[in-house]
Length: 183
Image (tube, rainbow, N blue to C red; front, side, top):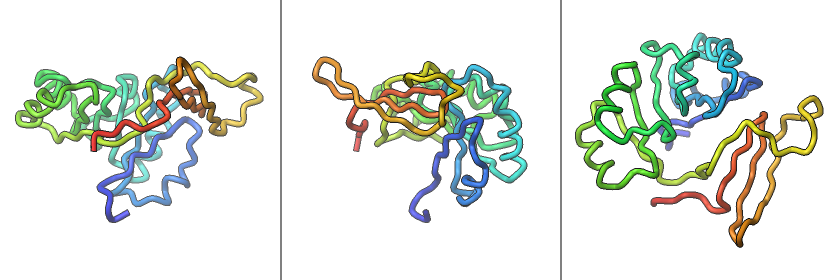
């Protein structure tokens, strides 16, 4: 783990805190899911982790602002919260964000300009299995009360293109069969 600045660990309402506690606090950035219909279900988990010393967090959607105590912890924005101009970056700073990650949809020229003028720490993901979409609609063919909450993967093909659908904790994410790579 010494080679990595940090690991982003995605939590859900049923996350087992003991799994996270096996990782060094200074290397873990806790991420909240991008889609959430009921933010309050995260409040006690977030508070418990903060009280346990986890001070680095990543949010991927504005719903997380309801449960994250801005100004008291190190909060970064994932690429899904677009920071496409200096006004957006300044607003993020004003509300207590410490770091932003540029969207993969942005242009190289715009990112370069923003890096030169940004008042916040910036980053850009160069390799990732980027979801094409995330949904709270489940792809499983059985009802919630019979769900094991285990990860299920489905290989899909449409018009000759291959995709992977991943169902986990009542969320569905669809991915290309190959990762996004700018390296």
